[in-house]
Image (cartoon, rainbow, N blue to C red; front, top):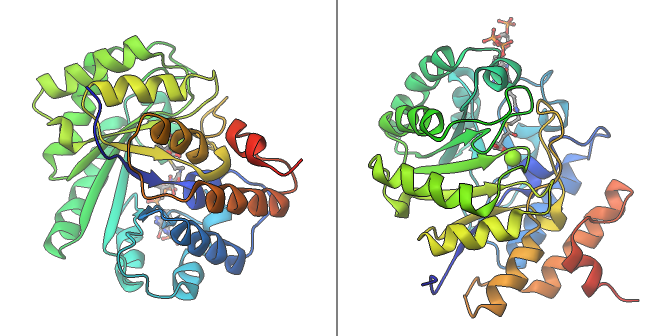
Length: 299
Ligand code: HMG
Ligand code: MG
């Protein structure tokens, strides 16, 4: 069966923009977030409190949050890797954070300058403090379907890292196919293994990149396995600067088109969303890679 309703976890302002070389001004980012909310998105991952030299595009996290009006009913989680990041987030009124670990040593090293063990040790006090402050905490596990340096990533390796992150007390686990190599059978097997390891399917989210055009097929497999939270990026922008070959995320428009076609409610106004992605594409200086955005564009 399929769910009646799906929660879209929009990552455009964060995963979508983090890899852009030209700095997008904070006021444009603020307008992007506001327009996404106006289009009906209720969870918008807004920025990252990471080292500004590692991700220069998101060095304006404080300025961006300061420029955003209060938006009741819209959740605005941010990425936080360490205690320094949490300090910054707390000072700026953040109430939802995401830590981000890696299933592989190669990516942990490149993305976090840590081994997998060291990165879990870095996250532990972050989650402890965040929970004590009443924050909601999501955990990402990246390279869950394959790694550019290590190739195939065994499912039990993904489950091991995911379990350690969830044991810290996180509310949700987002399964990250960072480089978009996964296929539906693999996704089903991974979800089944995570559920068998005790992570309830209601606590799972999926995060697909569309490098090999599999993101929608993988999403459908995840929905059939009981997942009801799906990450997507408006216009399909994005990619990770520390992951070779990572391209854009599943486009939110492609996801919404499929879900509405399946009779699944999202609360999203697809035309308003596509117009937002066209507006953003103009600012980025190239067309959106989303097929649905293209199809809905005035000819
Ligand atoms: P490091 O160099 O090991 O940091 O980087 P450190 O702990 O040694 O600290 C060095 C200096 O940085 C110190 O300053 C810290 O205060 C400062 P000093 O004392 O030398 O003057 N510092 C910070 N400053 C501001 N904010 C901070 C911060 N932390 C330390 N938060 C670190 C370690 C984790 C910080 C670094 O590797 C980093 O920022 N990594 C972020 C990488 C990133 O954002 N990647 C993209 C997101 S992941 C992704 O895209 C995948 C995902 O989409 C899911 C999927 O697709 O699978 C989520
Ligand atoms: Mg990603």
